[in-house]
Image 1 (cartoon, rainbow, N blue to C red):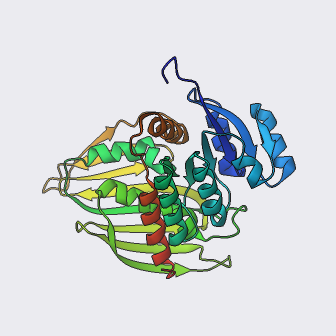
Image 2 (cartoon, helix red, strand yellow):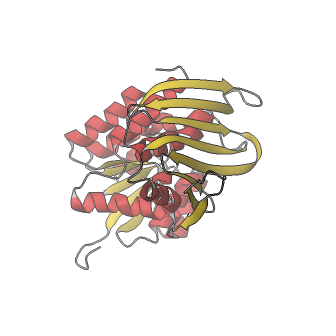
Length: 311
């Protein structure tokens, strides 16, 4: 932020797990001044607002009318579109948590409202800002990618109510695949299972991209421990990343006797959510296209809904 620029007045709508994280990180970013917290639950709104010296509000109307310049929308998916559109129409820049909305039509409404009001609409695909994903993107920059495999598994999260693993977890990986390949998913072969939940809690998703890359996502809520791994095979190397420890390793130079070389790839320590919110501020300040656009969010959602047979 330039010395002469005043911080942008920002609010957070919906302070569950993700919204609280946004509030915490916004307090550390000089480009923002966190002024309002909205949650339908008055006690929750009050508690989080007090932590950051913000004003609590409990109605959508009060939040939209709060005179904000920017807002983070981390309310339930089905409410993203109405709240986001209302904010954009008031001239507020919006970062909406993933998935962008509950339906493709709602996603399009957000995109249209941002364009009509010349405001920034960015989608919170936080793994884009994971230093390990960044390191993998650099490692494969000049390579012909053959395949991508992502595993994102763990125990059932007690907070989930409205969506299954495809919308909650696989949307991260659909975005990573599109980001790493700079290509769109054209073929989908989903296998879904329901074991403990009333929605799918296990998914094996296979994709083919426009540029010929094949990709596979394994995701579930039935593994007792969390795993987040990304593997990319290219013509000359095999790159493996742990998205939690941020450790990235390249395997290359395979010899006829089976030997090969390895090297670690630097991934800079940084909090992905902070990088994401800084990128949001940058897009607002410069007028540049945000790092994750509304169209990105729409494409990620569309692929996820196709996996569920809902498009």
